[in-house]
Length: 204
Length: 330
Image (cartoon, rainbow over all chains, first blue to last red; front, side, top):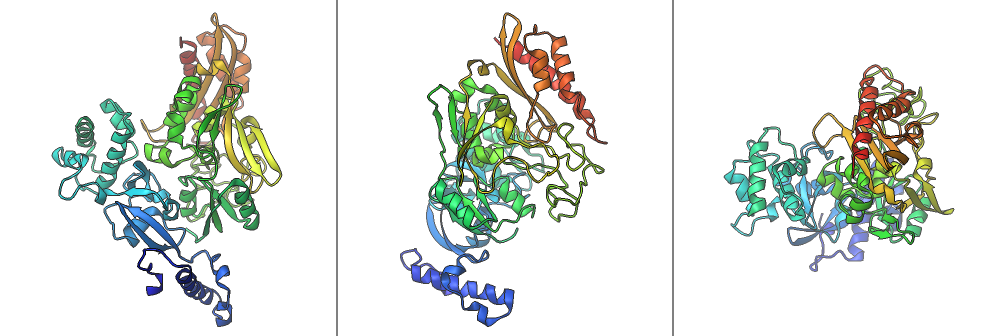
């Protein structure tokens, strides 16, 4: 719906926001009560409807966009379902597998356990943002060189996690790598090669 | 996951006013446990009030030489803080023994203090099981169910869910004080008084009033707290909740234990201060036999369920081993 598109400056005007909130809010009220009279509610009250979208401004891989999202949308779902960035994977969706790992202001986090709306003003980097043009990030190159995957589903999370780990600068040994990569599971069991790839990227 | 509204308060007073206006709200810190539980339908808030950016996210020295940890300090920043590692190593070790780097990067100090149990019956997304914590009065499916991860201390006929935190076990051994802000003013709550064992009302886990906001944690300036350690037994080598854990702080002079603080995790319905063990140890010569008898004393009142009896012996051995390790520290 075009009312939800930002204006040319990339920002929502107050008028556009209220209009779109009113339209969506009205739909909600109708659906819940089946009574057209219920739709006659002031825009201010619409804001309190839980499944109303609100404009959320996100900076992903250096590009800033404002999109309408319900507050409950996780950062992971915003990336995959609303921003067409499917490189970040949904594994367990409960912070147990690490497939959804992205970097927020350079720090690795599980994007499934954080809401998109919490990240206005943050710099978010996904697997799609690591390469510089055709030049792969050193961690990406190391994963290819060491064949550090089989099916590849956990790989974007593994790579983002390794980029965060190297930036943290606390890893020294292979045991450190194993411990500090513990938040990323690989069901194919490519761990030996993952450790080798992270070690090489860490030393380069 | 139910739909909810969201607001970002700009200061603690506004946050508590916001809560008062929207009583079915929950404060949102890092979200690692809260958002998980909302996804599981364990909780269904009408509104989340984001507080991460309005409470202190720094660790600052207190006038008496202790530390004040802001409620929004991440588990990572707390665990790697040089002052914490030097003066309260048990806290750093406990935090790093839990979760994963990604989770620790998001999780906050206050959020960790308020994290909820991993009891599988409590966390069932269908809410299909009896659970006095989730649906008060409905019963407890764990007591006559599969209860391998459940508690042996602080339990009642209504709930045997284990408190999951590592960090809070260390805070319990460090005489931490929890700082709060609410409509009735500010409170400083000794952590010993903060948690409630799951007795009559398992849904009530701590003494916070509705809408009361945790703003920080104080660590006292106790010099001998530097001689401390955290040990944890778990099903995996990493990234797993404790089956049993021990936080031990000892003051030893010439082989005699002058003072001590001990807390146990993974085996109780709250971070468990081991006062019976402490009484056994104070004033005594540090020997392996003493450590064993102190551990026996603490677990004397433990109640085993069908599948978790192993935890009692595990906790005894773990506590004795941790005491021995800390006693041997230079």
